[in-house]
Each structure stands twice: as C-alpha cells, then as structure tokens.
Amino acid sequence: MKNITLFASILVMVVFSLSAMAGDNRLIDAIQHTQRAVTAVDGMDVAKHAEMAKNHANAAKTDKHNKYDDKQMDDGIKCLDDAIKEGMDGNAEAARKAANDALKHFTKATN
Image (cartoon, rainbow, N blue to C red):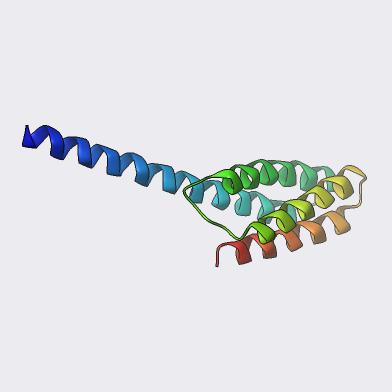
C-alpha cells in the first residue's frame, strides 16, 4: 500500500511539473517567434511570425500555473497586433519595430 501511495504522489508531482513547464514553453515559443518577426525581411513574414507569437503569448497568459505580469503580456500582445497589421499592410519597418516592442514587454513580463 505504501508503494502505491508513493507512486501516486510522484505521478501527481510529475504532472504538475509538466504543466508548469508547458506554460514556460509557451512564453518561450512566443519570444522565439517574436524574435523571428523582428529579423524577418518582408512585412508578410513579420506578420506570420507575429501571429504565431500572439497565439503562444495568449496561451501563456491564460496558463494558471505561471504568473506573468499581466500588463506586460497585454502590452506585448497589443504590439504583436500592431506588427501583424503593419506587416499585412506591407510596412516591414514599422512591423519589425512593433515586434521589437513586443519582445521588450515579454522579457519584462518574466521578471
């Protein structure tokens, strides 16, 4: 009986640890796509990576196991919206700047 309890306890800890790591991975993925948006050559590529970053950032924000600075996350997501709009409009420079601003917010959100 002790072995079953020990095994169940370990299993529960592993599940919670994996959930916490998943949230971190989502923000890491958001940051990586944002970095790709910052270095992209054309506006459409910036928009594509900014959209993927936004999806990951929204998932990281809603993760209950990690607490990021909500204001920084919201500001970063708004910057990604701007990057997507500018990129779709063909304004690559403005799109990269907006993505760079998002990157700064996401970095601050983890502190």
